[in-house]
Length: 120
Image 1 (cartoon, rainbow, N blue to C red):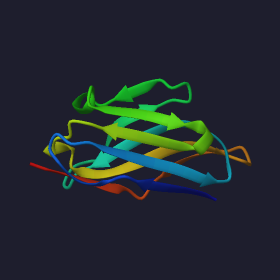
Image 2: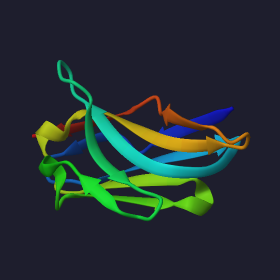
Image 3: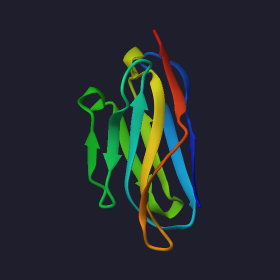
């Protein structure tokens, strides 16, 4: 079994910052790509940022220059530093990890989501 635990969401004023964390535990051999997605009410889930096992990163145009994704392989964790937050960043944020289990197979795992609310 693999478990993902997210933390760091909350309520912040526009212009403020938050840092999201997502840590995986369980039957893990290694983790490939890690990413953060978000879903606002009435909208589809969208990719916010992703990081490969080689630390290459990719960002949605809407967050470039404001958000930074990073990973700690020793902790099986991924982080999202969010600065200069805007009201349009309000959404439920999910982490997604591509994990190789001890037995060898790869699976995509999703966190349960952490709410980010940005007030004006």
